[in-house]
Image (cartoon, rainbow, N blue to C red):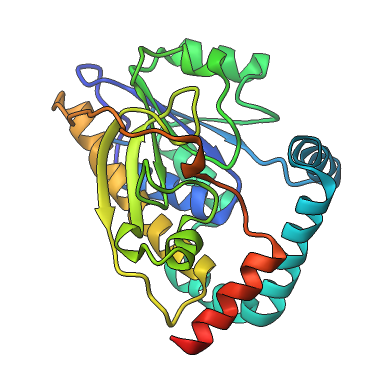
Length: 274
């Protein structure tokens, strides 16, 4: 059985979402040679949380665009939802939340389920563990007051896209749509105040798999990124230098949003003719 990091090794806390892909990252971490000393799980999956999130997006980007993006999600589930679900079951077979958190507790890992990472209870939990660094796999924003609990460049995250070229949402879709498939892949970096813009640890190019949907390609990249994050964490707890480089060039047009209906329909037409 794995044990929490010994006192002579740097400890860390994992910030995890309640979705299947995030929980798989936690599974990789607790099964590694360097499991976390604690984990904070945030899962804002209720109706009120979803409505609040949608309101924020609509205020930021406008109602027409958001309705267009929602329609894409509905159509995609009808057309590709079945094969996406089969792929999810294949890639993430064991990431069942309650069982996984029970395994963590049995290994002596502190577990906190919170409403937000910057809640009073979460901040207190992290401070008491005094981590050397944080590992984040979550769909939610990690606030500055959380990032400041560890030294700069010590909040480790990942992204299913090759940064800085494809940051934000659905990078696999956009690199295929823009005929830049050589930039399909995943990235490991340090999280800062920007969108997937922090100091870079590594990028990994992978072929776009045309037999999968664009979301299926995201899932494949997320699975591999989870395993690679665990390797980076093991290096950090052993005191090794993982190497950091500044992302360049950083431009606003590299930040992608979820595709709207027009882009999605164009994408599907192109896929039929490839």
